[in-house]
Image (cartoon, rainbow, N blue to C red; front, side, top):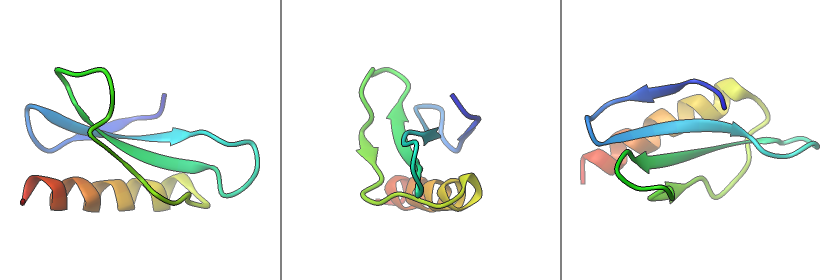
Length: 65
């Protein structure tokens, strides 16, 4: 698993390398109290950096609801 960032005590996001062919990266938002993610990226990203930025943006948007 790749590094994750925390923005809230209950939620974090993770960038995952899921596919062998490009684009291969996705992100997931997790509630630390649950096993399954509460939100996942719809698309794939060409690089870890792009998926990381999209995951950060998605988590900020999710927490600002």
